[in-house]
Image 1 (cartoon, one colour):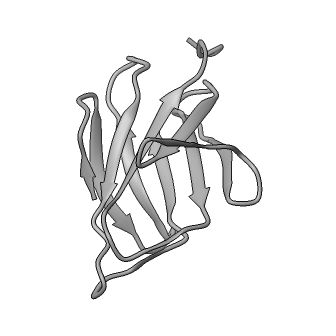
Image 2 (image 1 turned 45 degrees about the vertical axis):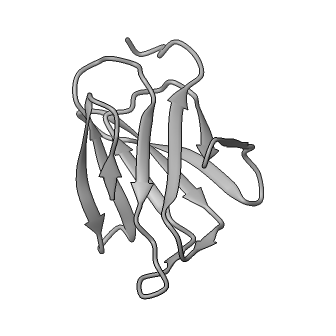
Length: 112
């Protein structure tokens, strides 16, 4: 996993959560671009991404520049923790080539 935008840090794959984990550093509400390096030797199947400290701001997701609506093939939710609110994104997708996922806030964060 690679992170292209500043303000976010990769924490890699967490096997206990079965998810790729990204941490938002600071309060800036900017999009994060994540590249998952899938290949024929290491295929990607239905990835989940946890973005720690996302806040309560709703989000939109794009895969390789194409918007992905929430529904059967992409789901989002929040995990409320004592210190922050995390965003969880699950995508129904199999890939054997790198996948570029952008998660962007769609509005103001009501908690900030």
